[in-house]
Length: 124
Image 1: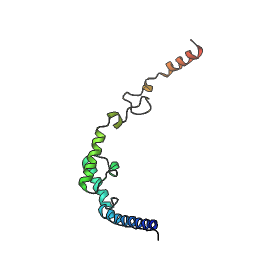
Image 2 (image 1 turned 90 degrees about the horizontal axis):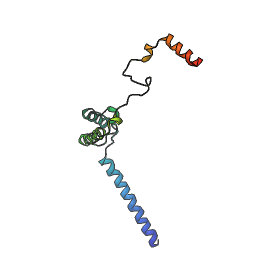
Image 3 (image 1 turned 180 degrees about the vertical axis):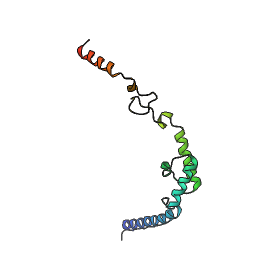
Image 4 (image 1 turned 120 degrees about the vertical axis):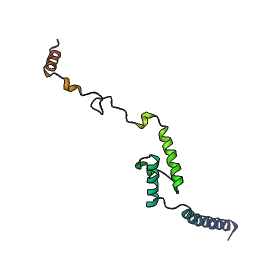
């Protein structure tokens, strides 16, 4: 075996050893956050922080304190958004959404409407 093959073999063994040790320690340090216990903890923290349950799945952390800190950061980001991004503006089109005034079609006089249409058609 020449020197280059020896070095490449040593590097490959070292990389393999680091990857195998790293994989084991990473699994031990980071529990599976998709377990029902973590889901329940995220939902509990979301409720107590005022977040909707739809956002609970976005919270990160492995302890309740970490999840609470993440929820607080998310709430602060939501509060700092401009108001027009947090609410739905009223539609400018009367039939497109909530209207503050009663519909104007209830005040239409069909005889006057017919007279206006005939006047426009006849050009007078």
